[in-house]
Image (cartoon, rainbow, N blue to C red; front, side, top):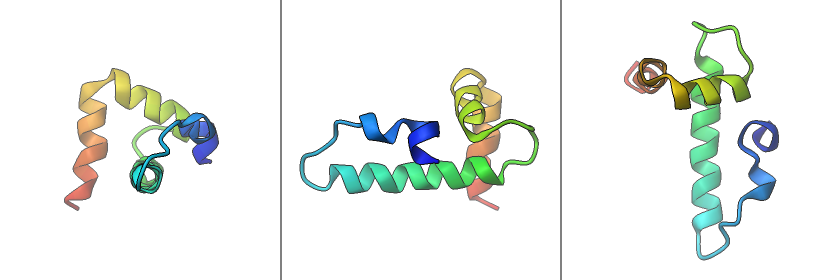
Length: 66
């Protein structure tokens, strides 16, 4: 799923703990996108929508407090 939605295989972060840190951030983002039930889209489409639609991004990030 991470490779499809986030193109993880193309990531060029290699130095230090960067690869592990980015993988952790991707997992957090993936879980937040999966928890969103307001939009009937796939994870990749939700990720792109969050990049284009700022209120949607705030709604996704607002799930952290709940």
